[in-house]
Amino acid sequence: MTSLHFAVVGAGTAGIATAILLAKRNIQVTLFEKAPTLDPVGAGLLLQPAGLAVFEHLGILDDALKLGARVNGLEGRLPNQQLLVNSHYHQVGAEYYGLGMHRSSLCHVLASKAQSYSDLIHWQMDAEIQSYSESKHEVRLKGLISGQTYEAGFDGLIIANGARSTLRPQAWVKVDQAYPWGAKWTIVPECSALDPEILHQFHQGSKLMLGILPTGAIPSQPEQRLSSIFWSMPTPLLDHFLRRSQDRVQWLNHIANQWPEVATWLASVIHQPNEHGVMQSRQWLSAQYRDVVMSKFGQARVGVIGDAAHAMSPQLGQGANMALLDAWALSQSIDFARRHEQIDWGKLWQHYHQQRGSSTRFYQFLSRLITPLYQSDLWWAGGLRDLSFGWMYKVPYFRKEMALTVSGLKSGMFTQMQYQDIARSDRHDLST
Image 1 (cartoon, rainbow, N blue to C red):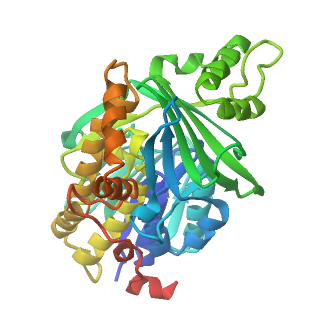
Image 2 (cartoon, rainbow, N blue to C red; image 1 turned 60 degrees about the vertical axis):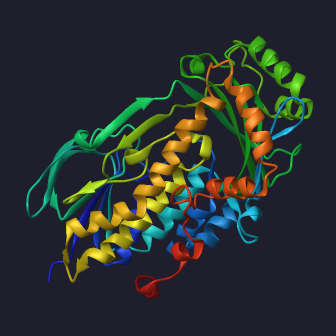
């Protein structure tokens, strides 16, 4: 009997995790990636307990812990040294924590696991899938691989190629727009001035936000511990950040007026401009964000997951976690809808939307609600945030709900997922 064969477009967190989980179910996967080599570029990220539960389900949590940095909580400080954000995972459960990771380490851990299914996962790098057509019996992909025309048919297609995807069905897209604010980021040796198990943020109104995230290590230098630095700013200004020597001085002085110990550390790790007075372009890279809302995530033989399905502001730190939850929910839905080598596609997507619809809507709504309080030109936003968050963190119920939200385990306003329900082994894990 012919086994199922899926195409997964995009070898990011969602794509590789999906490939692994399909291979666990003895499903053939061809993984298409536009880049010629698997060399991810990006800032450090924070895997929340929800994402770590999927890592445990995948059997790669121990490998991730070797490279990541354990994070016990998030603290956001105002210029008067008052804590604006004071959220710790133990407020949800004593066993909970986050994991700061470099994107290359995350990719390394996932790709290494995928290699153990080399008989089922087939990689197609330098692959630009331009279009697809769907019939009753297959989905046909068309595009270029290493510049050569490519066309092939598959049983199913999973689109996981990021926030700017042009493959997702436009009829399903309700919102697709760029955020007016982004961030500059860089990765430096671990911050010695602050608690290395806390994600530190520094806020002044809604226009100034600095973040320092413990980031662990990269596979080639496991002994060198790292931190990621994030600096929020309007998107049109990203290309002009610290371009001149005096810009660096002014930037450090601005920070020193509010948080002198942080400025002292930054001065020791942020390079001086080169001989031409220009900052090294490779040290600071730009992050730009999109808001993507879809009316559905799948129908018939085609599904959309990860940032391609629900990109949002990074304020809640849920991007990679939601991608991992998407991959996990898709695998559970396939189990629900599969009989031998046949899939009831209607049942699959009904189950998937039950698993991911409410949680995704909750996080997208909350992200859209709070992002202007942290990144905007609204004169009143920062004051409203400082006043409301200040008292909310003093109320035990809200303090726990905020920690639970950050953990990525909320499935709705008044409901939540359980870590062990995601992490527990199932019959497909017994063979690995």
